[in-house]
Amino acid sequence: MLGLLSFPGERTGYELKKWADSSLRFFYWSPAISQIYAELRRLESCGYATSRRSGPEEPRAKRAYAITDAGRTALSRWASAGQDPGAPVLKHPLLLRVWLGHLTQPEQLRALVHEHVARTRGELKEVRDALARADGVEAWGHPQIALRWSERRLISEVELAEAMLGDLEGL
Amino acid sequence: MLGLLSFPGERTGYELKKWADSSLRFFYWSPAISQIYAELRRLESCGYATSRRSGPEEPRAKRAYAITDAGRTALSRWASAGQDPGAPVLKHPLLLRVWLGHLTQPEQLRALVHEHVARTRGELKEVRDALARADGVEAWGHPQIALRWSERRLISEVELAEAMLGDLEGL
DNA sequence: TCCCACATGTAAGATGTTACATGATTTA
DNA sequence: TAAATCATGTAACATCTTACATGTGGGA
Image (cartoon, rainbow over all chains, first blue to last red; front, side, top):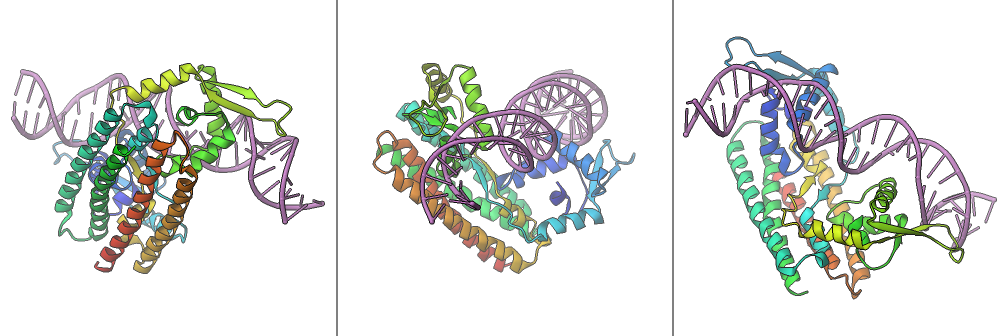
């Protein structure tokens, strides 16, 4: 959440959720909206963010958050701590099903792989849309690199699934 | 846990942890050992597993678990429920750091990517070792496919990191 | 003799989701 | 005018990790 707020501008919890859904989630994760609101209050209580209620000029009552200097300092400390970011965590339910393939009919297993390919292609389209929206925007260089990585990763995900389909045939 | 037990033989919690660390973790996840023991007791309390204390012939006192018929039934029901296994979950701390690259010195960021490549190559070696151990064993066909997928995935992970390094240069 | 691997657990706490509740505004 | 989207929250619960505690057996 602090990272999302570290980009210029202020935003509501609702907006942060949409942004996380359309970008962060492809390489990290998108928290539940209820958690976002909870974390924003927590950040404010530590002094890492401030919030502002929308005035009467706005049609809707809402609360927009912005990062504070203390928040930026904390975030930079986190980022420049020489420590290892840690290994990626992958939980791939399809692979779990393939690993336990002895419990499933071969055609059903292949059908699951095909569904996975279809879903992955759908996500690929979403990433490309996000990339198109980010294109040319100032100060979004790094987020764009993360999205490009995500794009390539999804392409590779499709290839991996197709190779696995071949392995399943050969069994 | 039930899935691990669904392969022939009986095993202790400790052994299950080692197996999960050397195989499951590459495409799904390896639970903490404390959780494994808790889940095994839980499985036994639902009748999905039975346990047997080692007799006096064994040098060490330990408890080996095996799946029951009820456990197999429950697992098959889970596997053949026509439902979607769900989308893969990826939490990639390195990408999070790249996404927030404006907080880090360029060379430090590239160093993180290089460390990631080195770690990934290490995991690749582990997968290949696991694959060598699984080679030829009866009834391990599907686990082998999952490991081959993991091997290709790690190769792709290295390539993705190297492509990203190129993007970072171009920034 | 000392350390490492084997082996099992308890308790506290962090983390995150789901279900539910509410209400305003915009769009079809 | 109905549905979708915007907008915010509470409470219960599920899930999982960390730190701690304990003891055995084998190898250097």
